[in-house]
Amino acid sequence: RPTPDPNVSPLPPGSHILFAQSGKIEYIPLEGHSLKKNEAKTALHLPNHSDQSSRSLRSDLFPAVLNLCSPEGIAVDHLGRNVFWTDSMKDRIEVSSLDGSQRRVLINTDLVNPRAILTDPTNGYIYWADWNRDAPKIEMAYMDGTNRRVLAKDDLGLPNGLTYDPQTSLLCWADAGTHKVECMNPQQRGRRQLMEGIQYPFGLTTDGKNLYYTDWTRGAVVVVDRYARREVDEFQPQKRTRLYGIATAHAHCPSGQNYCSTN
Amino acid sequence: NALTGSPGDCLPCPCPDRTTCAQVPETGDVVCTNCPTGQRGVRCELCDDGFYGNPLGWGGKVQPCVRCECNGNVDPNAVGVCDPMTGRCLKCLGHTTGDHCEKCRSGYYGNALANELNPERKCKPCACNVAGTSGSPNDCHPDTGKCVCWSHVTGRDCGQCETGYFNLQPSLGCEMCNCNPIGSSS
Image (cartoon, each protein chain N blue to C red):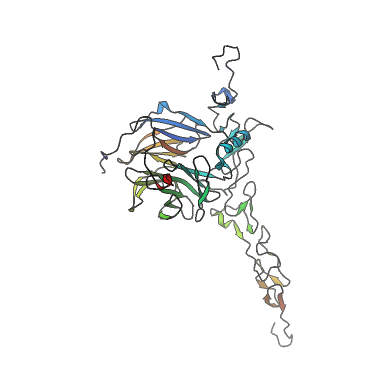
């Protein structure tokens, strides 16, 4: 039985778990590594596409909202001030500056249903998962799209959620086909199973100690202790509709430098 | 805004079922914050992902949100599979098409509504024999898959000569056998 890691760093105050549900982004404050569920609130109401005026307004502010088909995953490199996203209809991965300028297609081959994407800003990597039913896979590349590598392709089903913990250099994914959470160190390979028999994960995030995933069947945010390898909490919003992406928000971005921040 | 001191300071939320709302400080826009189950949008006028309708009857009559009908030809793991207002399916699979993924795409034939787990088997490519077809290799009857054949050419894909004909040639079709009736056994 794995012992709890004593090196789990305490979370800075002001950390939150954010998740998307039905045109809204909700947040739950974190205290230590526990959800303060009674303080859950709506962070943002998203203007919706029945309102044409708000749509054109947003494309003024952020030109990259134009010409999207099914953007399902988004990740920010806060050091390089870039945003990466997947589009599962155009079957590609794109990047732009945080202000929406400098947009370009990074990867447009061998993608079928790219969804989850994340960045490792310190090392200049992006990771993504493709839930293509015929050949699901988890891949990585440099932030400029070069040096693309497949990290996992066997025994995958629908890897919907993906997260990376820079402290332990572990990439973890939640799979709605195999009903498992698995992790791997992308530099060393070698997969290990963290959970099995979970229901229908969609989004996945971590705060270093816990994993948090949204579940379509349970309509909840489920909290898993990574070291004890068991479920420790859940949050079920009042509204009973699907939960989508989930993210950890810290009060401050970790500082550092990568090649995108220098040129 | 309760601070201006006039009788119209507090207005009822323009939201269905007396649900709550909030005013965006920068723009003054009012958004509903607790739409009834299955609804979303600034005024709860939209249906949730995977459902369609017109729950408030904007620009037409009220239609409650119902699940989109894509005839099993969309992936249950996909998001945004249909238009929340018209219900038109946006992510038809297995070479199906149509508002409800109810027919085969051009260049394919079969039954898009077949009770078949593998969507690839519902609609098969026309794949007409290039030599035997007078049309495009992707041009076939949407149900039967019959390609348009040159004269005396037969078969679904125009790959065979009719009885009594041989030598399938591109753009020419098949030649008559011309066997001497006296010397032939058939």
